[in-house]
Structure formats: structure tokens, C-alpha cells
Image (cartoon, rainbow over all chains, first blue to last red; front, side):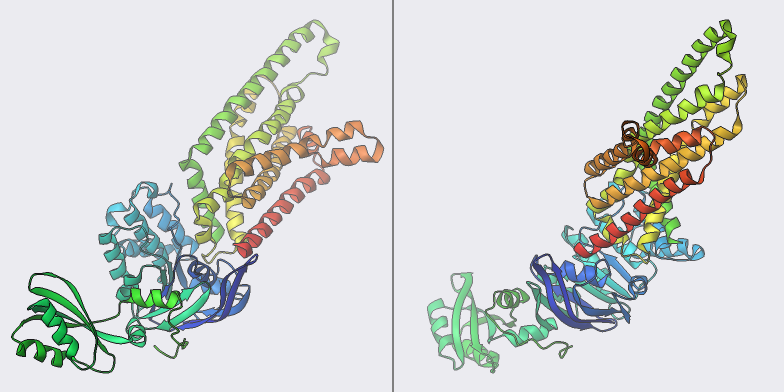
Length: 321
Length: 255
């Protein structure tokens, strides 16, 4: 649905994005993850035909963003960062304008606006002036205007920024529900958001793509070791020592707890699953085993590693999906 | 059509913010005052003319009231038009709504046309309030219809030229005040460039006078409908609208 090749945008002497190449399939929800200034917003702006690229090509919905911009815009719903809205209009007036601007026929306009309002839970705010709405409602109006006309592709720039936790959950589930029926590309610098909402992640830093993969694959590719968390009731020094003796254990770190009840984080060799062995060791020593579970490398850790160049992931464009 | 959508939205925005009301009020006050002073002046002269029949022959309401009134209105517009246009692009750019607007399936030209039509409509509404004064005059004296019609046409064309100028400056910046100031400055320049005509000689004099935005208005107010005056105003309007279009395009590139 979205094919990008060699996309570059230079502002003066600053290269915002450099030679980006990636693909988004129909019905996918893809996250563009990167620190501030990485080039996420620039990419969104180029894909939505707000600005032309300096070089490279992109096809959105099958149309070229440079030569067929009008066709592209007919098929997208765009929500820029900070959700800019006309604050002196009411929600209904504003959505009516957007419907007309998007070329929806006069007959269907009212119905479509009604649908968008329902979809984004804006019934209570319909007649109110946008300037007087809370941030959460405004974000929903922004999403509603993007959804008007049922565009097959959504481009969302930081859709959950500035919202409170409850509102964030609402917006995320709204987006997640679109999987399969719409193609969504969203940008964010909130790491957990990506694994919660997106099927694939494109990590971008300083204008370059650093990795493209599913959140799970990335985790797997980066793990040097498998970690196991244990909660054990027993004398800490003895427990630590006994665990260390197990073959394949790289490190034992005592985490928290008081007295005899402690939690231990055990780093084990990547290729071996030592959970059974560890459990046997604990029980045969007569200690209580209250919890045992594997711990995944969080996306945060992946992100820090990739972006601070501690890890070369071996970028495989579009091969993993 | 996309331009209609933008037009409706602009009209709503004008009346949702205090600017339109402020401009209307100012215009009504100032134009009313101008009309009043011109009227009083003429009536004073009429009294004198009553005692001096020879004097009276040159006097009539159309020349004595309506024509100077139209010229004065032109001056008022010089100050008020920038107030109407300064927010049109600058505010959208500052609020970030321009980015969204330019990603709808609308051509830049449609956006510009919608905004220009809204500004012109607002202006026409403004102008139509003066019709009250003219109508009042008809109750007590005879007026020539033709110069009044051409006078209004001239004012309309003049307004459109000022508006397109203002839109152009609004598209160059995020700052409304700067846009308004430049629009005013440029309009003023076009106004006083005619004075060069009185200082220079021969062909130069004619050139300066031709460039002056008020000279052409004076023709219209006199009941003279000449191609060159219409071409001047329409040409200027088209030029600045085109320049605005280009400025939008360039700003897209530069982000």
C-alpha cells in the first residue's frame, strides 16, 4: 500500500531524512519509532503530500506522491502532530467542512460526519466549539477528520501525545481495531505504544532507518541471553551460590525482597532453556519456589541499544514481516 | 467544489473572531463621519450659492457628495483591508492548520480562491452599508445613477486589489502583525506613488499617475468607465493572487 524508495528530504544544509526505503502492506499497522528529531514528522509530511521530497520516490495507495498528489490525498487520512484544528468552529461545523473539502457528495456528507462522530465517541461534544474542548476530545476530533470519507490509508503523527493514560488507552484501541481493514502508519517516541498497537516497527534515527521488524522478532534478534526471574524463599547467600553452580548460568543478581523471600534474576546462555533445571535445584534444596518466569528484553532496551549504536542489528528491509 | 468549502469555512471564521466586527464598526464610524462632513460642507456652500446664482451652477449632489465620498472610502480601505487579510494565511500557518488544509484533496488554487472569495464577499458586505447613505440622499435630491454605479464598481475593484495584496503578504509570514504592516505599507506606496506624477514632467508624470491606485478610482467616481482602469485593477489583483499561489508552493518545499 505504501512503497518508499530512497526518500530524502533536505532543509537547507540539514538532511532530515536520508535514503529511506520501506514498504507497508495493505491492512498493516506500522509504527515509526524514533527519538525527537529523527525524521518521523518529515516522513509523514512527505507521504501525506504536504511537501515534496528532495529526491527518491514514494507510492501511496498506488499513486506517486510527486506526480499524482491529488489522487494520493483522496485516499489518505492525515493527522499532524499537535492536532491543529479550527478552534472557532463547532465539531459538527468543522467535520462538515472537512467532508466537503474531501469531496464527499452533498447527500452522504451528513451521514458520514455522523459516522465519524460515533466512531470516535464524540456524541457529547458535537455542538461544542473546538476551542473549548479538552485535549482528549480534540484528539478524537482530529482522528474523526482523518477517518472521514473512509480513507484506506491513515497517516498519524504522534496520535497519543499529551493525552492522559485513560485517553491513551482509548485511542490505542481505536487504532488497533483498524488492523486488517485499514493501512495505518503512525509515528511515536513512546516505546510501549509500538508493541501494543503495531504489527511492525520501523526504527528511525537521525534520518536513517535503523531496523525494520516485528516487535517480537526484534526482541529475539537482540537478546544475547535469556533471563529467568525466580522468587525463592530461602537463605539468600546459599540460594545465590547454588544457582550459580547450575551449568549454563552466566550471572545471578538478587533483586528485591526482605529476609528469606527474595527475587533473583538469572542470566542464562541464550541457546538453553534452564527453567526446569533451576526449578529442580531450588526444590531439591528444600527452598520454596514461588515464581519462575522468562523475562524478555524490553523494547526500551532494544531501542537504547540500537540508537546508541551498541548493537548492529543487520538491517533487513522488508524481509521480515 | 473545494473552493466553496473553504469559502464557507472562512466566512464562519471571520464572524467567529472579533476582527470582522471590529472592522465593520470602524468602517461604519469612519465612513459615517466622512459622509456627514461632506454633507455639511455641501449644505454650507449651498446656502452661500443660494445668494449667488452663478456659483450654484457647478453644484450638484453627485459631484459634491458622492464623488468625494467614494474617494474618502478608498482612503479608509487603505487602512482597513490589511486588517481583514492579515490573518488569512498567517494565522493558519501559526496554528498549524495550513499543513492539514494543504493535505486535503484540494488544489492550492482552490484554497486561495475560496479565501479570496470570502474576503471579497466580506468587503462587498462592508461596502453595501454605504448604500444607505446614498439612498438617503435620493430622498432629498436628484442623483445621477451612472456615476454612482461606476463609483461602486471602482471601489469594488480597488478593494479586490488591496485584498489580493494583503493575502500575498499574509502568505509570506506566520506573524499577522508583520503581514498587516507590510500590506498596509505596500498599499500606501501604491497610493502615494501618484504624487510623483505631480512632481515629474511629461511621460514620467503620466507613468506615475497611471501606477497610482487612487487615480483609477477617481476615474470611476467621475462616471468614466475606461478599459485601462479596469485592466489596472484586475491586472494587479491577478498578479498578487498568482504571487500568493507561488509563495504557497515555495513554502511547501521549504517546510
